[in-house]
Image 1 (tube, rainbow, N blue to C red):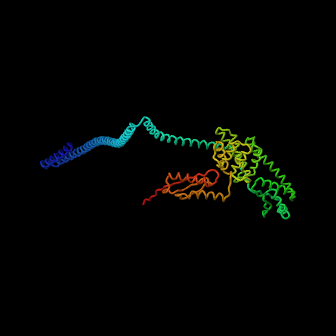
Image 2: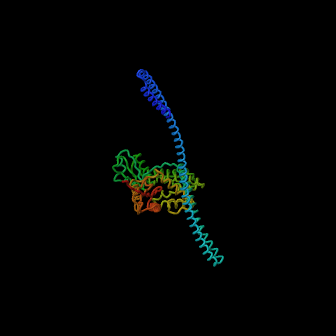
Image 3: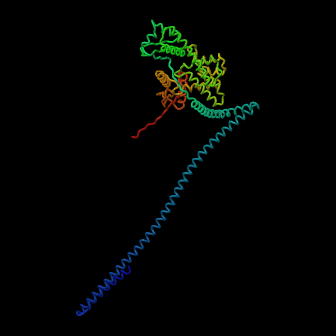
Length: 510
């Protein structure tokens, strides 16, 4: 700025000098002086302009330098301000956390203070009760005081022991269920018997329908003679190239079938020939029965059965139950009972023996009144079987209460053999009625909305109203339905009852 001022002053001085020269020069020297003055003025102007420009540039450089220094100083100050602000924010957050922690601690202390106050009240109440007891005991004899103390301890011990017993029972039941499932699964895997389904009628193929007339005979004498000898019914209808033999006694039906097949093969059909063929067929079937009984005893490793029991056992070859061959079923029950007895560390022979003979009564149940379990037990008792075997036969369907391990093993093996998929069959009508009965039992209960029998009647799912049935009542309802199914129905295996209670909360955003 000083340089600029000097330049301005020089410019003014130069102008004054020029004016002065112009006024004092003479006309003769006016031109020369004017030129010199003009040159001086031009030089002064050029120098002044140069000095001004230099001064301006220097001033700009100085101003830029000052500006940079100020900006740098501002940046430093801003960094310091931000650092101070961050430290203040951190200090504030730390204070907030400490405030929250102090609030929580204060709340906890308040809660603890409340607990302490409650505990203090309980202690005072207990102290008061103890004082009252002591006052009573003070007036008691030593024996009365002892009884009072024992009664008090007995109540506490009873409660604790009940809790321990419940826990032990639950643990023992879980372990027992797990072990039982393992034994049953192992037994089922090791025993895989095929089942051959039989029917209550025998159909015999004949070469041509012309033979039907010869089977009937003159005025029906051949068919009457056949039915009287065999004790069966011979059905001859419009069915092409076959005749049917029906009888509730499977052995008689088999003898009749063999007799008729032999007559058809021989071609000579008359009463005398029918009687001859019947005797041969009876001897043949009797021999097969004896072989079947002996083979069953041999397969199970039981070699001391009474001959009558072997004969009766062989008759089961021609007996069916729900489409399941009873002799095959008895063999499977024997194997299952033996495997399970071995897994439990017991002698498998008595279990096999009881399993093989458990359905013995079915061989003669069409001739003797009563349950086949009771009939079989009477037969076994009559022919020298031990009391344990007789009781296992008698109790395998619950006619009497089981009281030995063999009884329970035979029951379990019988249920497994009968309930295995494919072991038994039933008619479509019976199957549908069983499902309808299951749903009817469940629907008869209050609070039940819908019932579905699924898995071929092995499971019942019961939908209940959540407003009517609570969680505790659902457990009781499932137990009651299962108990009613057990008491009113007959079914293979077991039926699982599942009570489903669902609560929904619905709202709409508008």
